[in-house]
Image (cartoon, rainbow, N blue to C red; front, side, top):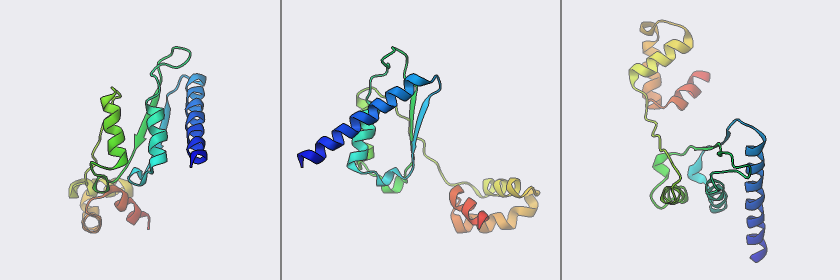
Amino acid sequence: SDVAVDAQKRLRYLFCQFVEIMLGCQEEPLILFLDDCQWIDAASVALLNQILMMPNKSASNKQRRFFFFGCCRDDEVNEEHPLTLMLSSLETFGTKTTNIMLTSMSKETVNEMVSTTLSLLPRLTRPLADILYHKTKGSPFFIKQLMID
């Protein structure tokens, strides 16, 4: 309905004003981090797009120091995903984007992580690291979760 669309537009406008105010109040950069972006909805993409497309200079003519970090599972985001389309659009308009792919850790790296975490020699942690590697396929998040449990 028109009322819902107008409400979303007002919310986007107010949030962009909030970002501008925060950027004008401090010298440090403003960082927005969103996790699980594979589940982002259309309204959130529209808001994020509007924030990222804001002019690069603030009202005080200072360079904007705004950084957005988004994490998603690459196996759940394809070429038609709203996030992928938004990032492509941003690049078309000159906004710099960087895609960082995180891969699974090797058996040796898992062993180094376990060794460091437990403050033990790598030769002593190798059997545990091998088990963790096989259970998690080298995913740092799952390794950490298993070690905590």
